[in-house]
Length: 339
Image 1 (cartoon, helix red, strand yellow):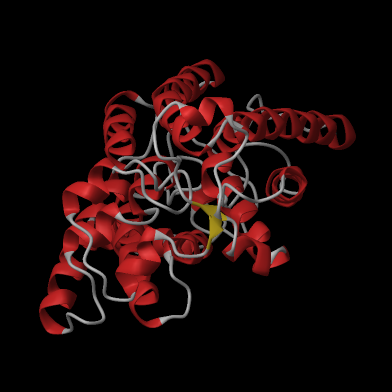
Image 2 (cartoon, helix red, strand yellow; image 1 turned 30 degrees about the horizontal axis):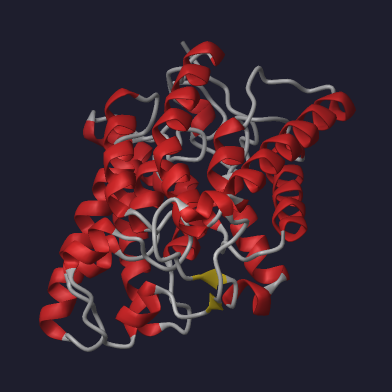
């Protein structure tokens, strides 16, 4: 079956090749439900250590996401059969815990309008909504964004009785590692780590993400290529420049690498469409993440790496598709024509 994707001028190769329809709405709904169930332990751990504010933000995020997408359908009269529940559910884990609720919700609404509504509905977006919402939150409220991380409480469970843990800090676990502090790998693995709540408990993200990749309706190539490349680049970099590149366990367990690998880069809507393109996207994202973490003023580079890869995925696919034609001994078909 041929799938004629929108914006052929932006994505010139998609409309000239056979691309299988991804999944039916019911299959994706089951996959999203699986993702939500798998992340509930992470939400529970975050609430127990940092306060129940995360559940309040989750409810507001889902309500705002549904409101904006339904309103967009009513205004544009374009309904693709899908809703972006995954982004609504992921976004609360991607902002500093101390951020004001109105700041988070307004940035999510703006991201949905630009990424989904303006592009004609869910499934036609080029960028992952939650990543764009995270970028908007950082850009619009820069000073507040950097100082809104909080330290965990002294015992698990007390957070369920408290709205938010205090005090606020800008010293995340990843920032401490970047300054040269040695944090044991087991301590990083078990948490709780200071940072985004998606970074707090790597073991929970690994368990949930592994099951999600195995049984979810997701892209598996990019996450695997991303993780393997992160491990390889950090290993080589640490051997060459140990003061600039953290070792492999610190590079993978600290920050948002695991969360992005399992739940962001696995998204089929915004992934590259060719197998080679998906693998190349993972490698490119890993390289950019390692370089930005080591040499830029931004502590976490995976968000910028994701945005860069989304922008260049059409080019990666174009290269992959042309290479596939040459491999079969065929010349590249003229743009706009079906082979």
